[in-house]
Image (cartoon, rainbow, N blue to C red):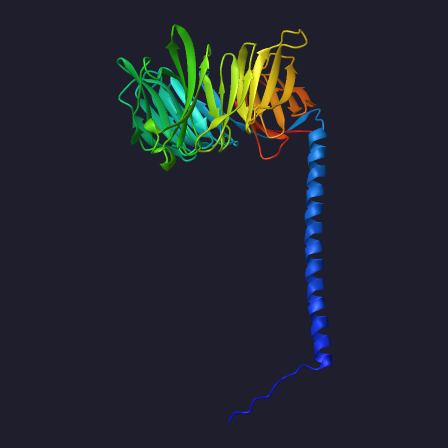
Length: 397
């Protein structure tokens, strides 16, 4: 018969075990306290750094580096995900901030339409039928629409939407970056109207379209959202949501991040929320004529002529919920604008002014050369400055 011996811990063993468990709990508690204290310190330091940056004022800039650039007089520059995109009637190329050509694509177009969405680039000839699609490495594919192109847009992954003429109707087709037709649709004035503006979400699964039509003798607009994923397969024509607007023309639509969209009309600014079925969340009625529309970092900026006499223009900046976060006078004849995370940079060929979102002027100065494009660099106070013959890296100080 096997011997079974009971083990009963002695009082000393119990005390040692209790003391050991107490040490473990104390060690864990102290470790958690240290982690929380470290996190709190990091957060406080980040808040201090942001506060110092947000309230810092720059008085000049220094040139970090300069590289030669060769361009034709009829070329146009755009930003291409931190790089310089240059196009003309003869071709399009991407250049890094050291002046090195990353890729170059030649063509012959009378009136090129160029759309950029981070790494993706699409270029097609107005009333032509060929669209080239490029990414950060070069040409990805070529689309033959077989119909005259009126407008186009591109998603971040290279999906292209094209507005096409087709005898008595207008087509709104979707293509992948290789040229495969994904969606073919018809637009008739007597039914849904004429597509005035079109935009694609990051993935290309949701399309926003502004239509113009006549109803009972008056001009009206509608903003429609189509979903081409599984979410929209049970909806008629994959139309998942839409809004109608009387006495309004809407020539500008777009997306703000993954779950927001907007539409700019002649008398209103509309905001929509929802990644799959966007719905209206804010409507801003406008009484002044819009001069320009700028977007960046989930903001929409509308520029008006200033009628008070205090400045030449006024910028009204809205967040994606429709809140007015900045109303800023612009006192010089600017040509372009950058909307960054916490600042707005307004510039002409010779002059530049930077404001933070609170309206504080952070920098005002002139360039030493005629500048055609400013691109944000890897620091908040550093930019790529593009002129006709050089690419310069500058830092505000």
